[in-house]
Length: 318
Image (tube, rainbow, N blue to C red; front, side, top):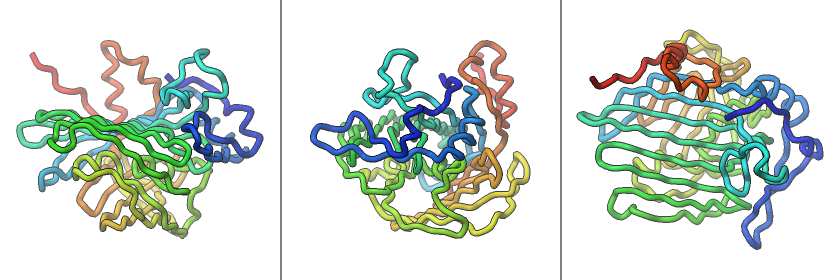
């Protein structure tokens, strides 16, 4: 999984280009983090551990609010640009590999007799603006399952999806990627920033905005760019969640479709996502947080660490 590492030495050159561009397409320039931001980021994230946050979840579905839980896992990885997967050590040339911040957002909630299990994996390059390398979504519930993946490359967003819904069984996305476009799935990474500030306090910006893959699937809408205004509060405020009281910076995303999303980000490092909510009734409130090499804790007894995230082990059928 994640390994202790420093950013590639080539980052000191100031501007990089994206590798593995589509034939005939010009690669997009990538601006590395400043030296100060890079040092601050890797002093925290270079130890090979993942940050795991448990949330109390309210998820609207079928016209009613559904209660459940969510786990947001943030971890750095080396990423293969050609294969768009985690790069195992020694299997790829250095020119094909760069570090990413991965966010695995896992949700589980009940809808009457059956439950939903949802996971979105978002990969953002460790660089200024956190360029998106990949986003994938899987949904499992008693009626069927869905998979959707998008790959931004050189000014394009190519995707593929498979679903059990009539009219959505198999399809592709072929979108242009607007300069400066923001992906909803990566907002929790972008807003945290880790010293690479997307917005100054009190600043706002109107951008092209791509709804989350989950939102597109639940609303049965073809993925398409819209517009949104992203704002950052001028001052910090206080919020109380099950994990305690936090000083936070509030980020607001007002979309042209009428949906407003709010992200309350811890004001001090490591800038955790403390709470999020939407005008449609979705809400996540922090239950607990820990940093662990969780992939090593898959043996009997490892479930005890769930308590650090405010979670309990899944019920065991007997």
